[in-house]
Amino acid sequence: MKKTEFLKIAHQLYDRFHFVPLLYGSLGLEQRLQMDLNAEDIDILIPEAVLREKWNDLVSVMKDNGYLLYDLHEHEFRKAELHVAFASIEDLTPFAGIDLTEIPLAEEEGVRYYLLDLQAYLKVYSASSKDGYRKNTKNKDDSYKIELIKQALDKKGL
Image (cartoon, rainbow, N blue to C red):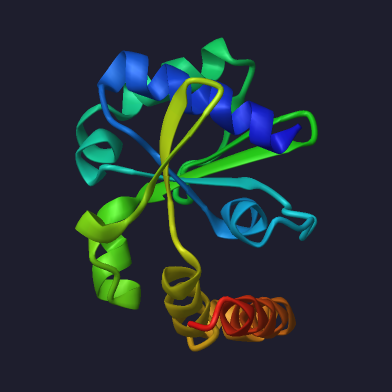
């Protein structure tokens, strides 16, 4: 259900703003690992300029999909049990050392989106595990995900 909702939102973001979003967080990692990690929400990375300059338009797109703005600071929207949060894709480079030009493009049901590869996810979760907030609240989840990523990379010989 979350993946279908992401594809719907990604399609509308492209139609409205002409950019390809990045599926991030546990939902994206689920796709790379091809296993259910019980993702709590849908994390989407988009250009900083959209967050700054077209925020009201983004809110409108989400409202058209039945979402209400839940947390302005976190750019989080909710609809029933679904939670969608937006963040800046440009933050990936200083946060985890990810080269944005090397993020693979995926396509599903005619919708294009970016999806980190396993090595990039390892960088992200390693950086997250050092973050103060996540270290105290999500450390167990991050450690588990890091181990899953390492196992998958070992199987691929990477």
